[in-house]
Image (cartoon, rainbow over all chains, first blue to last red; front, top):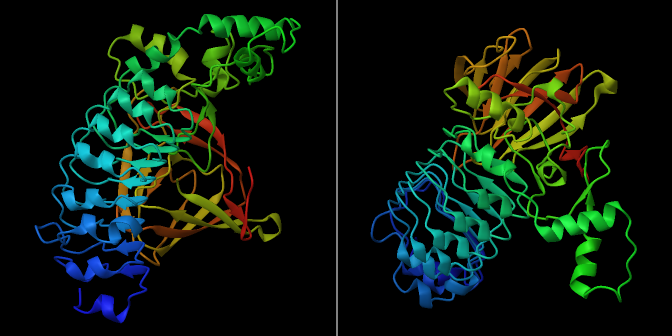
Length: 313
Length: 137
């Protein structure tokens, strides 16, 4: 970066030095108090001097919102980067990362994290401590398993896991209430994931709530604790038009599998109404898009029925 | 956070002309084209197109890849159901891509296919925006 940058442009907010062959970014960055977006993709960053020392104490640590370091040569996430407490969007796609440091949890404001196209083999559970994370991209890596703690990412809307080495997903992934997009293609997933979904019986509270609603049992706010009144008001109707059932469990909402044309909506909520409740996607459409690796015919037939309800595109 | 389909022109009902915007890493499923002609031109970036054979009637095995290629800026591609099925992806982790698509006659449903089994599923396609206006779903 040219010396004197911060003297010439003290009010600089956006700096794009992508594709300039930069091998290091020096102390010039430290004196840019208004900088909120730094784009430095497709350079030669990754070595020791890539980010300046003292980054954590600079105004940048609080002002920087967007950092794009994709297409560089980082073999590890530089520790200095983790001091950028105001960071909302971070991209390290297309680098040479082999792992994610647990201290990634320091980036408490992070909403968007792109780590696709690296050599990452595992995900630290500390990644789940990012309360604002909405978009997480981990495609094209070497990830073998997802820690169940990832279900704590309450804000997660979009999760990209395609082209990895996943054989199994933890059932806790269904707890990602706001998850709308999930890509899983190109993983050697096995039947087991689908099986776990169907063996998730409703709680007693849920069963009682369903009875109250489907039988129209009258109740007034004075009859029940406020929390139960609120709970009963959350009843949703089973999407199957032939079923009059309701369900409560907000664990499983609509998850769209992004690998499909345009927008495709698959509600997993069918599981919660009743095992007898058939899917609107009738067997005629042969909708199974399983990633099954089943060897025996038994496994295949067991899976086929359930898989018509689960799309792992 | 996935690729968006943005309708530009309806051609008096004769065709759909749309712009697709692909973020880094975005890809489509394997899909057919509901008996229509499909033209695609890359306006920005690169897109990888993987062609597949139609699966056997009662598909129950991995789908057969016919070929794959990377389409560069300004390159055009054409496909219809008699040619086969394809998956289109932006495999770049650093650059977004933009493509122009012409479908004639227009269609709003197609089948998507599971690469590992050949099973198909009919889906309805939607637009992120139409004529510059965000489509509220």
